Length: 259
Image 1 (spheres, rainbow, N blue to C red):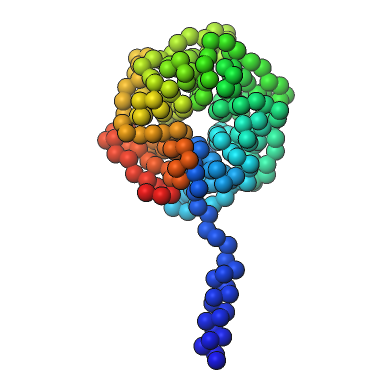
Image 2 (tube, rainbow, N blue to C red):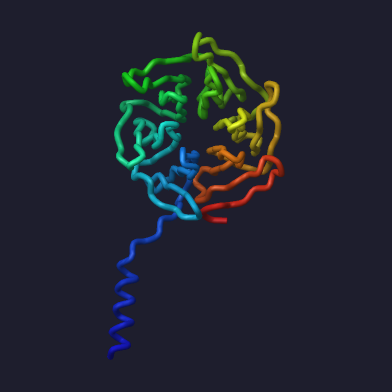
């Protein structure tokens, strides 16, 4: 009877344990200030991956995009209509709402947020005032990923198969790089190299002299991020995994989620 009682207690304790977090469909990835990975997932959660451990960083409805705040914390795109900020303590606030079909987020060093809209606009959310201004409202066809590179905002002009650069001082725009097919995301490494998830070409590319140059092929990347050591992290829309790409060798491995 004592043995049966002990087994029953173990079974009850096991049943009471919460299920371990797991990825169900990854939408985007970003590298946080502390080096951990932030993963936007279709399970209405943003996960944090650090030291082979997956935890829930925030519960946010349909977090399509995630971007690390250089001051700490991060922002996530909630259902394509609201930008939510999660501070380093995990508290969630709304930075902007009532938006329509936002496709990507990026911070500058001062904490201002830039975002693209499917209708063909790129806009800026001022950190201090909360005011939203339009930086570019024409000439883009369903833009997606964007990143600040020095004094330029570089945008994936997705269905025009190019990158567009917007001068943040003057507002002037120009073709920044070509040689892509449906580029959907872009990120900058510590040394300033720009890497692009070049969806239509099923590859990851780097920008060299205004052209896209292949880093790895056979990669259906949707979200892209770059760690401090140069490793490129990738998500593939709706597949429950994050992969790591070594840009020097082209080797890719799954680091969390399904193989």
